[in-house]
Image 1 (tube, helix red, strand yellow):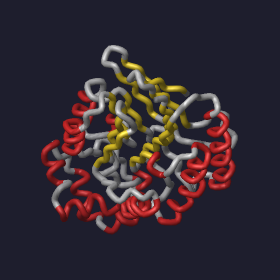
Image 2 (cartoon, rainbow, N blue to C red):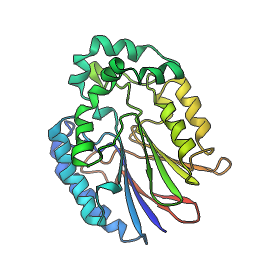
Image 3 (tube, one colour):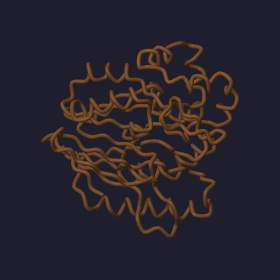
Image 4 (cartoon, one colour):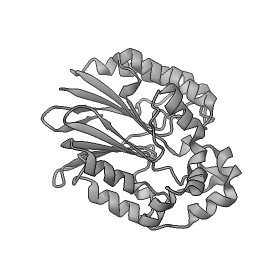
Length: 289
C-alpha cells in the first residue's frame, strides 16, 4: 500500500513575529499542499507534525491551529483526526506555567540527570506534575479536540499498516519554552524507558521516530542512546526546531533523517517549509522535498 506522509513542523500559529503575514502564508500553504498532492499516487495519508503547533500555548491558539491547519488538511486528503501524528515542541510549553513552578522546575532543568534517574523522575507524581503541567493547553487540545484520549506526554506509538509504525517522543519535557530567554540546548531529555518498551512490543518491520528537537539539543546520554537506535531500529527519523531543511540518507546504517524547516518565515519567501515522504509496501521510504 502506498502511504504518503505530509511532514511539517514549527507552524507557530498566532505568531507574534510578523503577525500580519500569517493569514496569507497559511492560506498559501493549504493551496500549495492541495496542488502538490495531486502529483502523487497514494492509498493513504498521514500528517506528521513535529512540534510547535502554535507560537504561545493557549486554548485560543490551538483552536485557531485546528481551524486553519487540521480541518483544511482533513478536507484536502479526506482523512479523519486519527491520521495526524503530533509531537509537542518548546512553543507548546506555557511560559506562564513555567513561571508558576519556576522555583521547583529550574533545579530539575539544571540537574543533568543520568538516564535512569531522569526516567525515574518522570514517574514520580510530584515531579511529574512540575515537568508536564506546562503542557496543559496542548494536552487538552490533543485529548478533547484531536480525540486522542490516550495521548501521553511521555511518548506514543501508532500503527500505519502491517509494515510501518511510528514512535513519537516528547523532547520538550524539560523545555522552559523560552521563559526568561532561558536556552534549552543541552538540557533536554526524553523518556527512553517508554521508547525501549515500544521497541520490544512493536512487531512492525519498519519504524519511524518523530520528535521536535534533533537529539543534539539534548543531554549527552540522550544523544548517545538515540543515535544507537537510528538505523538499528528506525528507518526514518523526523524532527523540526532548527527551522532549516536537512535530509540525510545513511545507506550504510539504512535510515533517512529529515529535519523539517519552519513552515513559513515570511509572506515574500518563495520556499515552502514542508515536504512529502512516500512509504511503500516493499519496506522503503523516499523523502521528496
